[in-house]
Image 1 (cartoon, each protein chain N blue to C red):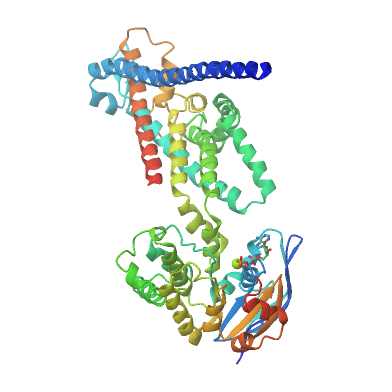
Image 2: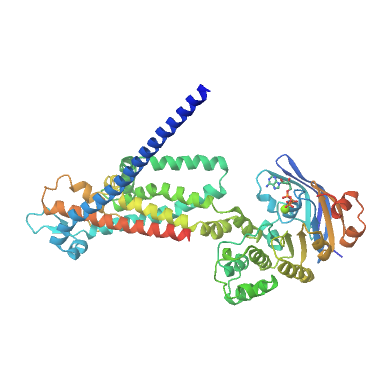
Amino acid sequence: MTETTASAGKLKKTAGTQATLENGVHAVFLLCGVLAIGFVLCISVYLIIAGIPAIHKIGFIKFITGTKWMPTATTTEPSFGILPFILTSIYGTAGAMAIGIPVGLLTALFLTKAAPKRLSSVIRSAVELLAGIPSVVYGLVGMIVLVPLIAKLFRISSGATLFAAILVLSIMVLPSIINVSATALDAVPQEYESASLALGATKTETYFRVSLPAAKSGVAASIVLGIGRAIGEAMAIIMVSGNVANMPGLLKSVRFMTTAIASEMSYAAVGSLQREALFSIGLILFLFIMMINAILNLMIKRKKV
Amino acid sequence: MSTILDVEKLNLWYGDHHALKDINVEIPKNRITALIGPSGCGKSTFLKTLNRMNDLVAGVKIEGDVLYNGQNIYDPSVDVTWIRKQIGMVFQKANPFPMSIYDNIAYGPRTHGIRSRVRLDEIVERTLRDAAIWEEVKDRLKKPALGLSGGQQQRLCIARALAVEPDILLMDESTSALDPISTGKIEELAQQLKEKYTVVMVTHNMQQAARISDECAFFLLGELVEFSATDKMFSTPTDKRTEDYITGRFG
Ligand SMILES: Nc1ncnc2c1ncn2[C@@H]1O[C@H](COP(=O)(O)OP(=O)(O)OP(=O)(O)O)[C@@H](O)[C@H]1O
Ligand SMILES: [Mg+2]
């Protein structure tokens, strides 16, 4: 008897502590959520505040269409045109995707449909490893292997070019393209493929005309993810692209939006227009990435309908 | 009456499971052959050996011959895509592609090289009419096929199979998801088809087998127990097990 009451009392007590605990955990969750949103808001607001003045002083059109970036010129008027950076970022990303999309999609198709199970799992873990390698390591390998190779191959004095950056970026976007589209391809019901084969289509025809279209929203998401990764990368490409503010050319040394910020911020004098202009580049880059995210969200929403 | 498919000593294993045991049967041309038997006895498995769809199952082992017009379809030199074009199939579960109704039908002909819009239009209309679904979908050919009801999807799959003009049509319980009216239309279609095609159909519905098939095969636990003219099987079955099954004493 006494034992029962004792345990009942204990039960009540645990229920009480449990409720407090539950409330506490909820509060922590809420705090984390608010913090995350707070950070995003802070960064956006800060970027806008820090990025506007230079754009205002230089003039928006002049800023984004100017082809000369000479922020510290002394003998002539300093010039703040970031078109070279914008174009380099766009060309670099487009080039990386031109290589990364076909290679990534073919790999994903191979892994999910054609490869023997064992081989597929080995390659999949290798791809996951690729995703985990720090970007500075990509840069190092590119600098030591790729850059000299390009110099030799094209007989140019320095191999640190847009081309080298494109190759490094295309390898860096592979993991997101492969992983996300492989997941989408895995989810394609087998019945679709059986139906196609039963109509006398070959396996290859089936993969390209049935499996891939059936996985198209996942494939599209993987591509947008890859674009986001490529356009935001700085470390790896600063080491292989030569970092000169040229208008882009495949075999020219170039500077990206990201690498412009990363390489000049350390010596731009506080309060100078140069420093302000770097923040403006950040703002423009931020807008690009917001646009890509908006496209991604739109696609995910479309998938649900 | 000539034989179009001659199955000789066919054995099939899924891993260790012996799913088809020594099947010998001659399927006549321009006839409807029904396959009956309790669930799990190997009807679908047998049907899929006739167009080599079982090749796709991992760990399957197949022995014996299936002669299609005298040619062994399991011969290594045979082009399996050609076999599957000649011997079409409608699956037990409706499986339209996630594309428009039109593209579902046009998929097969396009695969086999038909590009002309006019011809594709003609094929789409004719096969949809044949499958008794044209009236229901003619105004929404560009709409996704997955928006159709289950029964409509199954008829669409039948139309899709007809679109590549097969020689033999294998149907796996193609009417089990349909209402009596569509079922009647499909049965009528099967009757018309046998003038040009040969039909092999799995059915759980004894009345249906009796009503439309010319020949009937009764499977039990992976064995072909009895194969004879439908009238004969339903009036005077030779095997006790067949009699028990069709009179509903088990299964
Ligand atoms: N892919 C597979 N792997 C392993 N075993 C299988 C596979 N497909 C079928 N089987 C087995 O083979 C046997 C025959 O299956 P099958 O699908 O041919 O039966 P069925 O006669 O069509 O049955 P139902 O009337 O329920 O459709 C069953 O015991 C089943 O479990
Ligand atoms: Mg079955």
